[in-house]
Amino acid sequence: MFERFTQGARATVKGAVGHAERVGAGSVTEEHLLLALLEQEGSRASFAVAALGLHGRRASLEASFAEARRRGGLTKADTDALAGIGIDVGAIVDRVEGAHGEGALAAGRSGRRWWSGHRPFTPGAKSILEKSLRVALGRGDRFIGEEHLLLALTAAPGVVADVLAEHGATYATVHRALYGPEADGQGHAKAG
Image (tube, rainbow, N blue to C red; front, top):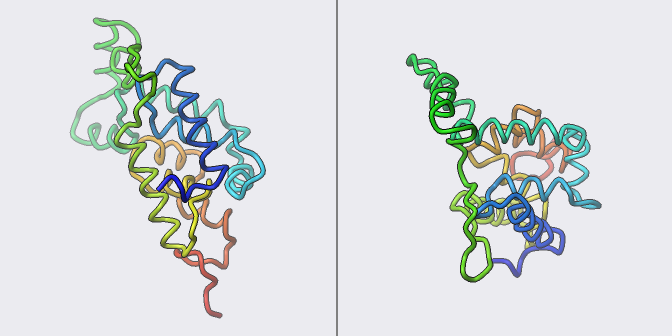
């Protein structure tokens, strides 16, 4: 599949590995893919990211990811659902951190290095890469570009899609920014 990746998409994947290394993460996550994607320039995806104003809100995105990590990776939808049945996730997190220290529930922050020196991709990150292939094939594209990675990140349920939606970047808004308002769900112009 990697042979179908454009140069920019490959740079995004390599950038995600770099992000994971810089923060000492034991594996590459969907969050790392998004942060690397935000650094790319001159592509259709970078235009969509700029059009949606995500570059100017990078600090807010990172703060939202940090809060999600603090909650043990629970999405806002998960937290709201639990609140609906009387479970206060914030109180639980505070209590756990009081007993075990700040960030006790933060997932994916292992300091260990793999014997090969490579960071593995989490199942969620692998799923994004696979989903980007499905997005590209669904559009009839013979390549996987950064735009396909961005759409896959918005389409896969989880913390990254949740945080992106909080910042106005849903699958629909990203699709419109990439392909214009005339495109339907498959990216083809609607018959008028």
